[in-house]
Image (cartoon, rainbow, N blue to C red; front, top):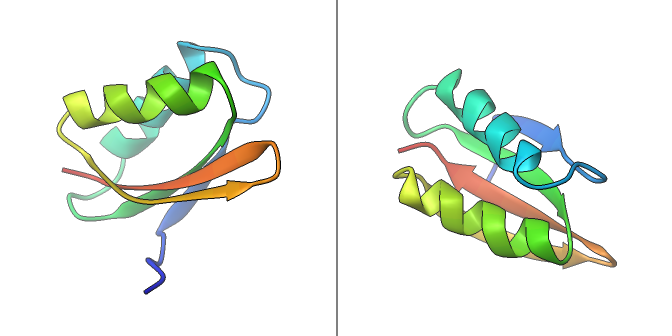
Length: 77
């Protein structure tokens, strides 16, 4: 089942920890339960950002690889 997102944040080319900070700020502007699609590079971004998002109390509801980047969907906690 595909999870529909309320908004998208393309962070390809954005380095850690700036990509996490931008994700966190965007989630803070959304309502609890809303879903944010975040596009991240492979390597450090896909390893670090989801872990940090979960530590903030949000939920990763989908991870999809597309070539050399990933689309993750985060439900705001």
